[in-house]
Image (tube, rainbow, N blue to C red; front, side):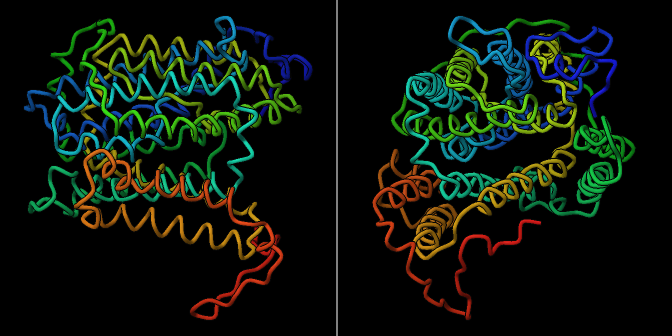
Length: 471
């Protein structure tokens, strides 16, 4: 809720207004709390997929601490590009940047079981994909027609569906524990369920900061239970350095066709997501439409921030939708509030002990939070699909795209005779689904839209626009 002591209604709608420092600092921290868990989770997932980082005895464990550290630092840097701006780079709006979930289904096949050396391939994709993303700013407004809610909703839903398996695996004991006696034990599930229950309780029955920080507080509750059960190892916190600067090319850089194509295609989707977030901020915070300059600047910052991250061993950045909702809830449009939050992120990214504490979170506890977060990604996609006119044409596009994408993801063995690069791209599931949806939406005649939907197996029939219950 907005507070009259922060400023007048006109001031609160002005991105250039700076609230009193006593109010601006907690508001900035609120933005950090809202995105903190989501920001560091992709780094942990990618390290786990590559097969390193879990367990304090792992020789590569410090590498995961470093990636977590850089996730915080460069989220702050990218956010500053949006709020302070650098020439045409940045929207000059309170846009919070963070590590993107959207790229995870692309990154996992690139690194799966290949160890820390495979991260260099990811970094090559991050750099090229970021530069491509920035270039999209030149004509982002002209390509939105190719991505209606049918396509964007499908893509977001596919991202969530590709990741929900990770949440269950983590809650049961983690990918490295699959097949062991401890995997799926009641102790593991207890830690995960505490996170889920506390998160849901705060989200639905609390207000203000408690509700906004529900996932973070849920993780802290699960962490406390894990500590009481003797499942927390804090040995690495003491060994972590008190201060460390980003290290250029920390993981090295390797450019491969699979990574470059995958990251560039996902950059296209991420750019459209950013356009939606910018529009959401201006509508929710200022009651107006976003200008072309703001949309273009935000897209530049998205891409430049991602490319810079890749040079220092961090993952792709994008605008965070949860912070868009926070602006609408507080009514404070000030970009300087978000700048304060960005400075907190940068400071945390310079202190490896913060990364060491985060990495001490048991994988089962993280799994509880991930189940909630990735489930919300699926729900967000379905919400976007509720705006689709479900006629015969759109049902066919959705059905074929989802079937092919999800099917290839679940049965990668069907592509055993496809070469390496193409196999990586296709088995992600996300890219074939997105490309099919885009292409079919552009080439299938609109005349199909006016035809009645044929009855399908099970007696289900399609309905026209407005038939979906949006309550």
